[in-house]
Length: 258
Image 1 (cartoon, rainbow, N blue to C red):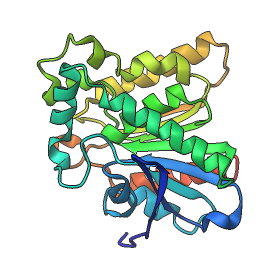
Image 2 (cartoon, one colour; image 1 turned 135 degrees about the vertical axis):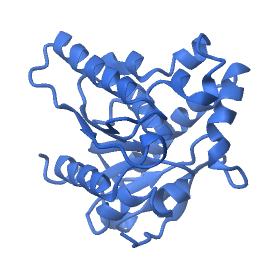
Image 3 (cartoon, rainbow, N blue to C red; image 1 turned 90 degrees about the vertical axis):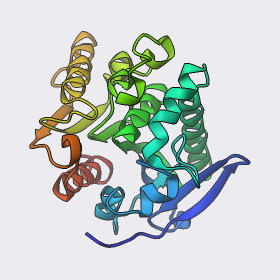
Image 4 (cartoon, one colour; image 1 turned 120 degrees about the vertical axis):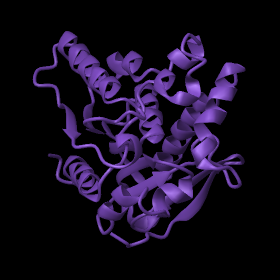
């Protein structure tokens, strides 16, 4: 796809900017997706990272995004995980700041009457998938979680090679959020040999979700892991077809209530 959605910026707080694309906000409460990949604007407007957003175009749902830590203007996204590692090694928890901003933004769009609070999903690509999972764990109004090639264990990323025993780094292992996410509807996509974020770690996260759902007596838990042939550098790419499938899953969940 080559369609580039336009997006607008909303001021949620003096230091919190929320980006939006989709129907006009005066349509009344609609379903919504919060999607994270890079900066808020690039997540919604920069191909190929915004391909899930492109596949949602034309639907009666809002798509929102905020800027991930270390993805602000003037910073290279290629260095972002190195910045995360440096911050966490110093006890600076920029990830929690981002998660708090997501919750603040969700409150804002619901209180403004833009979003139906019962039909809200959160989604992310790679590092954005980790932020999405952690935010959903803290915010039960995110009933649906979608992640493409998600980073699920920070210590496995090369930038964190010296921080494997750091407790703050370990606190962001997605597996540790499984109990809080066990009652959600979840879909994860990963390549069969993703050595950037680890296929095995994503599988372990999915199985942890399933086990916690079982312990909570949830029958036939709607938790899906879809493993496809790896593409791209380090097997970490995501194809347009996978993005399309994920977007259609969101449409089924949020609009058709599938």
